[in-house]
Length: 192
Image (cartoon, rainbow, N blue to C red; front, side):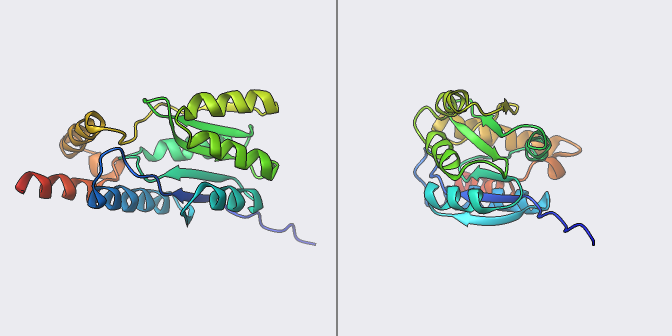
């Protein structure tokens, strides 16, 4: 009898408004993240709230990456690194520079209540500390990914603009920086 093919990892894209109140910016960031997740060949599911994402992650029979829509230009290596870590550990945490979380990787065998608690911690004001503390209390093996940023305020937006400009100067900038809609948003804003 043939061994059943394992399911492929999924990406759950959770909508989280950026700290800069602009609907077009939020849409650009969301679409860029969805494009990145599809580029690394993940099945992408949109999630409107943490409860829906927790339910989808807990019921999936392969690892789940919960990504947030307020993250700009996340390198594909972060996604691939999280998937590699989940082959050996329970939780991969992407620490944001503001003390939050930009990505949460969940191994498929985790208890649904643990997944929901982790996700609620990740979206909290002190997401990184909440997730790491919860992993410790639950006895889960967790590792951190390289730090990245999310658009939490005007300073983060300025950093994203500089990163976007630098990526255009790089030989591999177009392949390693998925932010075409964000680039267009910056161009349109400068014309206004």
